[in-house]
Amino acid sequence: MLLYHKRKPRVRYSYATHLECSATGERHDIARLQGLSAAGKPLLARYDLTALRRERARADIENRPPGLWRWHELLPVPDVKHNVSLGEVETPLIELANSTRPPGFIPPTVKDEGRLPTGSFKARGLALAVSMAQSFGVRRVAIPTNGNAGAAMAAYAARAGMEAFCFCPDDTPKINLSEIALQGATVWRVNGLINDCARLVALGKERFGWFDMSTLKEPYRIEGKKTMGLELAIQTQWRLPDVVFYPTGGGTGLIGMWKGWQELAALGWIEGPMPRLVAVQSTGCAPIVRAFDAGAESATPWENAHTIAAGIRVPAAIGDFLILRALRETHGFALAVEDADIERARREVATRDGLLLSPEGAATYAAYLAAARAGKIAARDRVVLFNCASGLKYPMPPVTLRMDLHTPFA
Image (tube, rainbow, N blue to C red):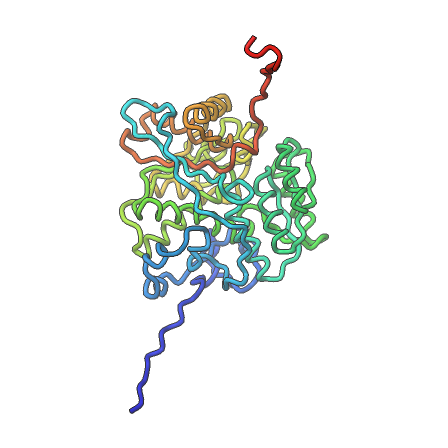
């Protein structure tokens, strides 16, 4: 007697199907190297969520080792052989139990992205962007950067055997410049801001044959950044927090988390409403805050941008309309804080809770306090603040006290 065994259907590594223009909905081929859409807008990766829901259970994801690549079905890399990895861990949630908060408020929690390779959340986006570029045979990549994105691109490009070129504003922290250079990239300091650096990347594209990895000018950094939101879901047992404060420059991570939560909702993997998203900026560069408060659908460029939080000093974001849409659809808001409040917040969290925040991460704690005082969040709201990089990468107070062994404690 012949026995026939039903063949088990092949489960795909990635369920990505196509790219979609974020403004027009026009489809683009995901099997080709892409930058912006035909309309000059960011492209978004789309997935066969119906097939994924049928072929994978939420428990399959839960049972894997933690880390960025546990989410490979919801990432665009077509095969594991193309993954360019430096050991992307699942970053911890740390409760600010001792730092100041208004009476009756439960402690906010920090998701500390400084634990990732190259010490910042930029590792997520650049891991995906470089992996996809490698799959298309790209050999040269370039980026405008305030520091951390360039460091991440340089590291992953080195890992993939690519040449890397980074353009940084003149006042980029020296540690970032040295980090980029040590990882083999060519790095220039530019007498301008991040948008000026972006123009140089575009200007050299044809002449030098590099692929432009600017924020949202290629489709894959956002897919890496969305893993922050996917990770947050699994860390909170699939019931997301009430409010998320996010330091917002180009806004890739904010848009990415919003996109990722929509995908999880379509899969039926999360319960309850999405978090209210809060875009945090500096009063010295707050185009998203100004546009949100004015009820506008896009932002006008910010003049004379300045702030100690260089990562959110982005005068004009190409994804501004997506940031604003995410804030409104999640019933969130935008808030700007003073540099002096950022500095106070950084000291407060370091001395009371032992956590070294980046200036951008400290801005979210300053914004949390301001929002609480203004009644924008409730005392029982479960709040997550994103710290985007290790505080060790930024200037810290000098130590001036000395002790003489011959006359100790004199």
